[in-house]
Image 1 (tube, rainbow, N blue to C red):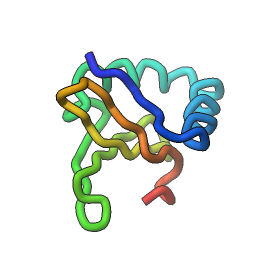
Image 2 (cartoon, one colour; image 1 turned 135 degrees about the vertical axis):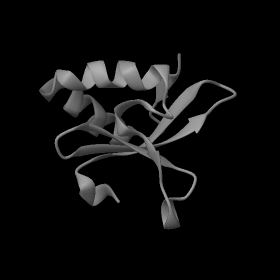
Image 3 (cartoon, rainbow, N blue to C red; image 1 turned 60 degrees about the horizontal axis):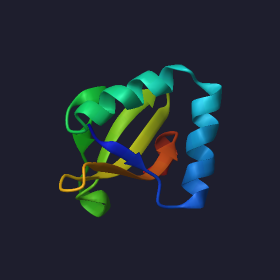
Image 4 (tube, rainbow, N blue to C red; image 1 turned 180 degrees about the horizontal axis):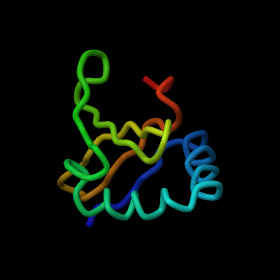
Length: 85
């Protein structure tokens, strides 16, 4: 199982804000932590975001992250509406 890692305080505030307001996100994050390459519509990004992944956590809520396979971590870089791209 992969651990969700939040490297910045700003992302942490937004992340936990979504967790408090949307109960369904916890279940989706739990699924994502089992397989960050396939769950929740996960897909690799292209262009300026090459090397990063994106998934949907709900209607109009996306998360951009990288996957550290060696340390089993999902590193969250951004979360929010599709404007995060």
